Length: 122
Length: 232
Image 1 (spheres, helix red, strand yellow):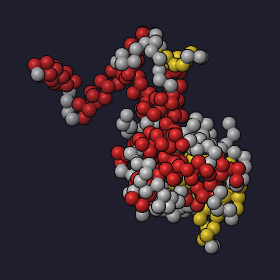
Image 2 (image 1 turned 90 degrees about the vertical axis):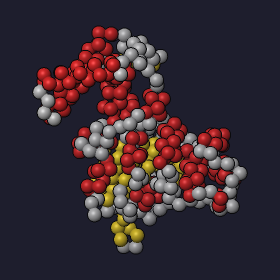
Image 3 (image 1 turned 180 degrees about the vertical axis):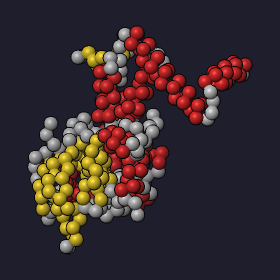
Image 4 (image 1 turned 45 degrees about the vertical axis):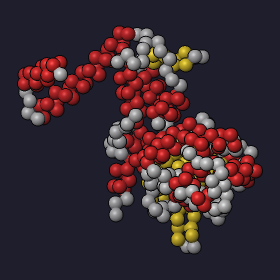
């Protein structure tokens, strides 16, 4: 995983794992790799990986079963909500960038539609 | 949790020139601490004091509650800045040497690591490049199941692709309750494996905080902070 340098690493891991969950790459009820394994695969300090998992647990996306490890929540409503929040944040960012280069809302929508059609005919 | 390393009021002078002035740091079990600072700021001196190689310091230095000495040396795996392998040694001679010196040395693990690093066990040190010698030494050091690993500039002569592999090797091979103290100039490459950072300058501690707390506080990378603090 590539990290940007100015943001805390644990926040970037949280973002990465959320993406895996909402995209379905990690399915509900699936077992999360142990901290150690995750830390090696992400190439980060185990304490940093642990902190990210603890935060995701606090948000309800993961839960710990005392003996068998950590699992993705089966609360699909929650997963849907998180997916919506992420989409909203990306949309806000996109709209902001477009407005910075002088696109008005209607113009941006028209551009998106055209771009989408171009994508479909490719 | 009690500290792996606890240093209070540490001072060290070479001749009359102070190298460390009132240094206070602690290293917790299970943590990887990055020790950063410009050349000549006292990093190697600090590491050597913890390793028990410099004894004429003043102040309080405790490793697992003990003063540096025979007992602490047994639980510390130290990678010095300069090699202590001899030119005529072969990799496998180094294994025998480590087996003799350290009870916690795992020869099978060392063999596995050097084969991953593509070092031929029969090759002589003299025939190895600087980077290859460094890789061999690091494999030896990480094959001990020590409590504290002190790595003084472990990646200097190693190419960027191999650096990534070695960092992963470090993450995979330290035991969970062990601690690492790593000094480096290659901040950008290494910072992802730190959870705590000590930045030194002119014999003193300038920053001593968890890595993510530093990122939040300054909103920039460790390397940028370093450049700012030590602007020439």
